[in-house]
Structures are given as C-alpha cells and as structure tokens.
Amino acid sequence: MPRHKTARFVFPRVCSKSKQDAFRSVRAVRIALTLVMLGLLGGCGSKVEAAAQTPLQNFPVASPERADTFFEREYVAEIRAIRYAEVRSRIKGILESVAVDEGQAVKAGQTLFSISARDLKQDVLVARAASLGAEAELAAARLERDNTKFLFDKKFVSEAELALADSKVKTLKAKVDELRASTGRSTIELGYAQIKAPFDGIVNRIPRKDGSAIGEDELLTTITDTREVYAYFNISEREYLEYMGKAPDERPKEVSLELADGSMFQSTGVIDAIASEFSKETGNIAFRAKFPNASGILKHGSSGKVVLRTNLPSAMMVPQKSTFEVQGELYVYALDADDTPRARKVVPKVRLKDAFVIESGLETTDRIVVEGVQKIKEGVRIGVLPSHGKPVGG
Figure (cartoon, rainbow, N blue to C red):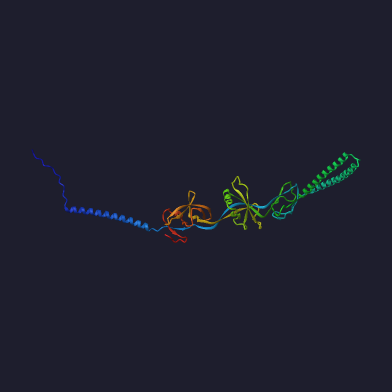
C-alpha cells in the first residue's frame, strides 16, 4: 500500500532582531503609562496644595455686649379735655342774645346765652303774690285758733271748735308751703334764662344765633377745659400682664406724645388710670395718661401716639444683621475655638431699631458673625475680622 506522509504546520521563526524591537515597544508603553500616572498624581497633589493655600473668607466678628438701654412702644391715642361739658337749654323760648363767640375763653359763671323770660318773670310774680296771700290767711287762722284756745280754757267753747280751728291752721300752713315751693321753682326757671359757663374753658361752635327759637334741652354749645388733657390708649392683654408683672416702682409711668404731624409734644405725661375691664370686641384694655397743656395746642378730640418707654438695664444686645430665621426661630453663627461657625438658636426678648435684646442662648464670651451671615457655610472655617476690617486671631 502506498505510504502516506503526515502533514505538518510550519510556524515562521522570529529572528532575534524582531524580538528586541518587541521588547523595546513594551518597555516604551510601560514607561509612558508610568509617566501618565505620575502626571496624574502630580496634578492631584497640586490641587490639594492649592486648596490648602486658598485664603479663608473673612467676616466681621464680635462678642455680644451688655449695656443699659430702653425700648419704646407706640399706641394710638385719643385726646380728651380734662373737663368737657355740653351747654344745653333748660327751658324753651327765644334766644335773646349770645354773649360770647366761638373759640372764646370764658370764666366759670360767665353768662353765655340769654333766653326770653317775660312769661317766667310773670310766673314768679304770681307765685309770690299767692304765697303772700296764703301767709296772711295762715296768720289770721293762727290768731283765731289762739282765741278759741283761750275760750276753751274758760269753758266757753267746745273741744270740737278748738279742733276745727287747729285744723284750719294746718291746712293753711300746707298751702303756704306749696306756694313757697312754686315760687322757688319759678325763680329757678327764671334763672335758667341766663345760661352760664360751668367752669373756666373754651367755647366751641355755636349753631344757634340771636332770635332763634330754642327748645327744652337743646344743645347750644360745648365748653372744654384743656389746661390739662387725657390721652386714652389701648394695650393688649399680654402687654398688660407684662406691665403689671413688674414691681410697682419699676413700672414705667412717664410717657411721651407724638402728634399727628410726627413731632413730639413738648411735655411728658404720666399714666394715672387703668380701665377695670378688657374690651370684648378687641381684647385690649384702656390706659389713661395725663398731660399738661399750658400752651393749649392739644384740643379735645385730637389724636396722636403715646410712646411708652421701658428701661432695660444691663441688656445683652446683638445686631439684627447678625441674625437669621429658620422656621420662625432666631439664630446666629457662633464661632468655635478654631473659628468654625456653628448655627446657634437664641431667644430674643425685644426687637430694637437695629438690634435684638437677647434673653437666652448667648454669653458675652461668645463670638458671633455680625455681618454677611447669608454667605456663611456652617462648618467651614472663616477668617475673623474686627469692626475695622483687618484679620485677627487664627
């Protein structure tokens, strides 16, 4: 049988020169990769070093201060004259004369108006005449009774006759008393024809003029005494309890008055009365302050604002711009020893114009960021600036 030859695959041989080139290529790749890695590591190191060398952001920092201060609350006030009276007619008739002018100062007892009184004068004369006639009858009856008593004692008249004489005297006595009262009433009514000022004051508007028909109880004018005035103002129940919760000698008594044009009244007033109950409509309670008004600038019915000042001795204060709110709570940024800011809740007592009086949450040894709090990142260290703007501390 024929002999078959076994097939063989022949692999090409690589010469030594080709081997050297291949090894060189691999080595070059390894060197390149190493250089790339070193470059990357070097870049990261540069970034870390650059970050470490970045300057801190500076913020003004200060400690809370304690000082004597005060705060003011304003309340809308209604001004009332210390004395105010409506001048009304007590009788009806014709207004004969107006003796004063609107805005005029008058004295107590000075005549303001005169009402026609002819009929009243006639009534007084008739009443007096009737009273005199009755008094004459009474005198005669008493004389008759005395004579009857004499005859009774002598047994010349009966007891019944004496009793009749005595009864007549009593009847006439009652009639005299009645007529005297009528005369007095007529005299008083005649006096109503002259309307006089009840006290020293200023006359207001006079709507009726000479010759006008005047009805009984008709308003003729008003008179105000504004040498002193009352300012009535209302405060809330919470403020009332805060006020009354202080010792009597610590409660603010002195108040100021801001006028409608924004100017301050030259004299201060004193709280002299508090209402006995709260208003059901508003829940407020009324206070009253008395002000001297020698200049007369304050008028009955005018308005203003009562300014109530409360002193706060040794109060801890922080600027308003150093605070921020989170869900209705007040916070500041307080610094750790390494100047790292941390948000800290504080409890305000009073808000002033540009500061808060702090009730709790801070000590005078604390340091807080006083400006730029919106730029602060909690936990990120900052540079510390004093008020003049130069870095201090670490």
